Length: 279
Image (tube, rainbow, N blue to C red):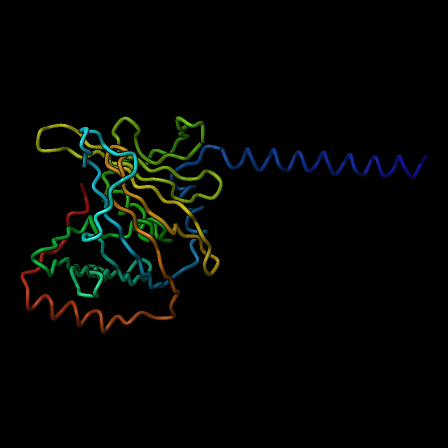
């Protein structure tokens, strides 16, 4: 009897402390964070310093209608508008995006090395803006606060307000930004993974268009998680899907080679320098 009592007592202690640990962990996960707390947590979770990423981008028509004048339930893909990207990244310093067609022809070249910026479309039939080609998750996942803040500003998220956000499906997120403005980001409150970015765009007729960027299918590579799929929606209608096909961390980037490409392109073309990151 005494032995059974001791076993029961130990099990009771184990169950009690297990319950207490789970309660504390859950409470900590949803405890209100300040901006500085959140930036600290995100900095700790970034292990990459340099990476090369290959992506495949599918384009869809979000507003096409069928013979009955209705928008189909399944998005209509436009294969001729798809493209690939080769992304070179060094945290806080270098971001180079080579946007190519299916045959490997260079369509757009984006070069950022500290304050040296170049964004240039190279095909008259395929014009890209900087907003079209930026890899949002890399900029936002930086270990540097200035890079994360810049990624938010590029989408008009200037408020540093951090609050809980309960979605219509009752999932709880951390929200950066002001909900009423339509410019905000949602993060997983336990892992601080980026779940979605939200923006509002003014159209020529004066109406508003909601832009939502969703990050999904997170995978782990070299102790770092990343979203394998990023989807873009206009008013909840899919118009672009970016899928990471390959990723590698590097000991060094071919900075001189990339710098030479940027220099030659700048000489041959009328380049547009992109400095308008404060919206």
